[in-house]
Image (tube, rainbow, N blue to C red; front, side, top):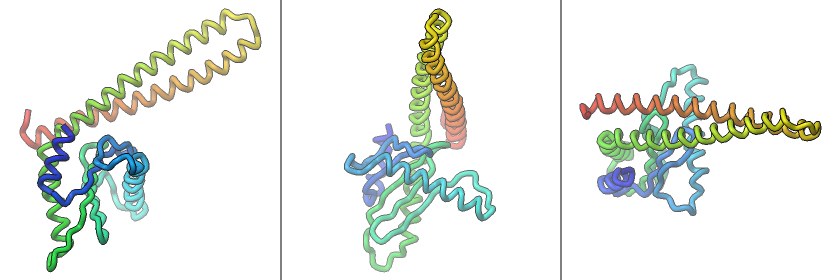
Length: 213
């Protein structure tokens, strides 16, 4: 479970104050922050940061496929963002401790190494949970598509049967609206299917790299 991974991270790294797991589009699917924090806005800002980094690379004419980690070092809090799967990320918020004579970079490297070692153990499980969530979303989208297609069918039938010209005009607008919604849902389904296929590839790669079945 995701909660078990978070507990292990916080046990090994007691400096971790908060954890945020989010998709590339900014959707937060797990966090230790309370609802007093604007969670959707937090996720959107993380997403925008990743997009900004990619754009910066493109402006500089550097190739950018994906990132591995980002580090934000400030006076009181360190934030380390690590890539989980094709579409998921993990952000760790560390409360900095003042240690005389210890270099900041040494402490940050330790955090990253320990966090990555923990994630290597749980990465397949995390990606499988993400896959399960995506497959559930796909089922919901297919239900929406069926509902919209049935609505479209009944509207078209009514338009054929009615002799009221005003009603025909009203129904024509409803048909146009329903058609747009069908197209939107179909595009969402296609996108979700691509995401699911990519996650399955991620799982196979992770299993191959760890030698697990």
